[in-house]
Image (cartoon, rainbow, N blue to C red; front, top):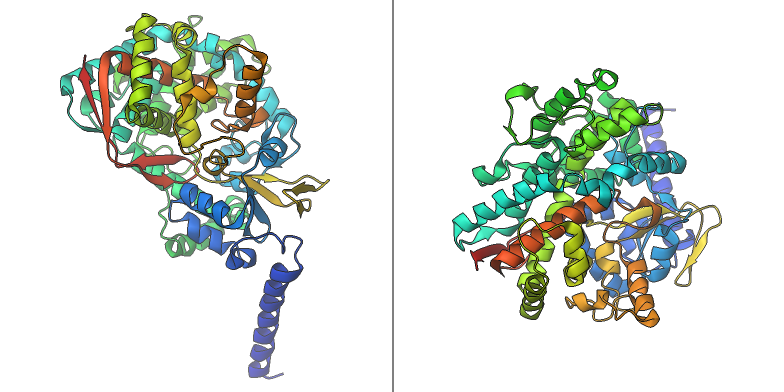
Length: 537
């Protein structure tokens, strides 16, 4: 056979393969009758192209408005926004596993088999996940948070003083909420801070976070590429470069906060014999940008932490390890401490920004909240438990703000189990990816009447059984921190920080906002374009 004939044969075979695949996916595939963009049914590249724009939240709401409650968004994936989908995919006891997308977030050391592996976001083994979550539970419960409340109070005092010094100057809302998150988390976790508050900027951490999540959001849509990169890094990276260029992505280089956190945490771990040999996860690209001397790095808040005294969260984790060495590995102490920053800083930022924005721009809500705080005698240094007990309206405001602007900006993928399922009349065979975008689900009027209106009152009840059931029904549809047994393990930490800061700011300042949010909607969602002014009362 001549080379020309061979070339023609190869090209013909390739063309027939492509055409038959397209025909099958459009007309014969089990999802062929599910409505959605035609190109989405043919190739996953369509979803990747849409995702690279960073408008997943609003774009996916529009898809539901155009095509209905079940939308086909790639050859083997549908997106749903119904109570049925939330219940089947996310409630406790669900047998829907996380989709392969999450593996793009898995660090190399967490992908290895062994007891040191600790990555709650990407852990696929349900039993291992439950065991690890139970193990860290005491440190991340509200009771665990309250052990370090005075440490947080001290930083909030400093932050409030900084706001007073601006005397009503218009500030970037998201950046200043991010500054709070970064300094509060480092103070609370290991009693040191880079003092972004006095620097009056976030050190470029949000820019780094956006780059990080933009890359993962898009690349994670190609599990085969992620798997190849993880198994054969050199080959995978050669493929990753043209794909990144094609989608306009930059390979993430890490966040400036991590080179500060890691040496300081390791310095503390070195003081305990059983954790002294813990090593930095140096094989995580971009995580450790430079090694620094922990002894002179950052402002010390509380340097008299000694073994056995739980003066900050790291001390509590070390204490947990000491009491459960057979179940709480040394590497886990470092892993969960870093997770506070990796998963906590941007989640806390959007949550605070959303609450500040919605409360301040809704006069009746702001007026009631300020009155409730005053009537309850909530002032500087108020205990978290006193705030939520005496001013339930504040928690209602927070949940409603999260409903409208959830921290997760993409549809969360789950895998339909071996039994298959029917969703809104459409049969989904085993192995189908069934995804739910919280931003879209929270705007389904069947679950949340008058969904576009900021209405904290919907989360309050009069104590009657009917009222409790109504709020319970809303709670069952709310995906603010994920759902069921795979909900965010750091949600109590986030609520603890956010409630305390909101009570302080709205109790002490007249808060105003201006501008409309412009979203960067990746897996983790941020918004820009809103300014805040705080004048002391």
